[in-house]
Image 1 (tube, helix red, strand yellow):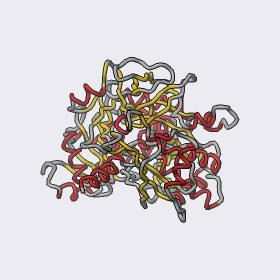
Image 2 (image 1 turned 180 degrees about the vertical axis):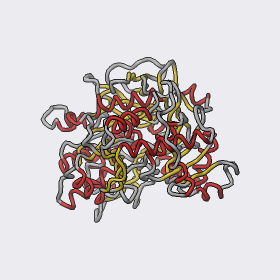
Image 3 (image 1 turned 30 degrees about the vertical axis):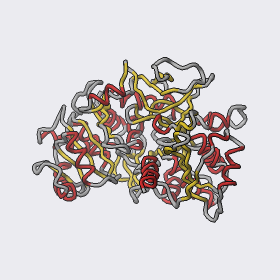
Image 4 (image 1 turned 135 degrees about the horizontal axis):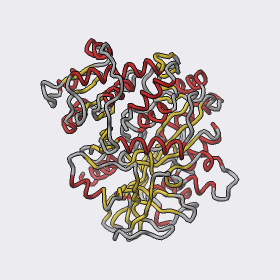
Length: 509
């Protein structure tokens, strides 16, 4: 089914339901939302764009984003959302690789000035004359048909270790992901409001579908991004606000709530994922804001749908395994089969560590024009995630870092996350990232990059003591490096590749 059918149905069934908001101000009801999308679809069809064609969106979050997204689907074409924070040259590479027929861009001239896109490629800026012309078209009566196996969303990975890859997400993948949200993550009603503070081009945008299906509100902050004070103010006004947030965003929001002496009133659900949430951080969040949190684990290749640590699990403080489960990523989604595979491809026993493999109706069709990556990532119908983990006797999944992040020191395996968890018990540690670096004696040694808490005075002895209370001696860092901040990508993920490069440059000198 074409994802735009959900919008068309909701616009038909509840036309006057409030739909699009800029801050606290309603911009369109569902009738208006649907009409805008249908007009854009009609205009694209008039330009010869339809099934098998791709249209890119190089845009920051805005009130026009969702109507453009659904307008592309109305025409039967595939969307290529590109993070609006990328450099124009990075965006141009994605435009070329995807063979997009048209680009919606906030600054078309910046794209053209890269010299990397074809001269004749149409680039349209929202709110410009060309865009207003699209909206003036006679709306399509109904979206073009789309089969379950048709690519609908071309999801480009963040590209932290080279050129990004385009994961082909089908209409069926998006349907499975959305229905799994209702089954495993949270219920949604027409009284809810989805707030988009993280990029609509990625995780936050993928959760729009279920909110369209249920006729909920869609809110873009006036800032267009993540501002804790703005979000809390909007939540108090709009009520029943749900949002997706990276762990670093959750930490900032909780700090703001604590400083203001509030509780996050008006926020219904914060779904967090996209990176490790340390036990100390989620405990602080629950203490400050109550049971508003749900954790998801997924990848662009299996969007948001590998496992869920439920609101009930997070809130079950009296359960004897509560603290242990806080360090997990929950149980597999209802659409996901999860296996832990050893280096020889055999399934590991309960508690055994190996690569996490997932299979289900939410797993991508494959990478666009990349048979080598497909052969590595899709094996006998299973997506090889590249993440190391284990499953306990109760079915909870635990991550042990990316396979490439594993440190082998003196012949022993060391998973950076457990070292990071130990060091975060020290009150003077605000943020941390642990990596391995080559060593002539040990093969590799553990190095910890630490952002101290404000006013904290840290030394190696104090940090070693924090480690000694929780992990074996051989896992302790051999070196501590204090930094003002950790390098992160546009989604808040720490770039451990950059930290390894820094250490490599030191060795070279």
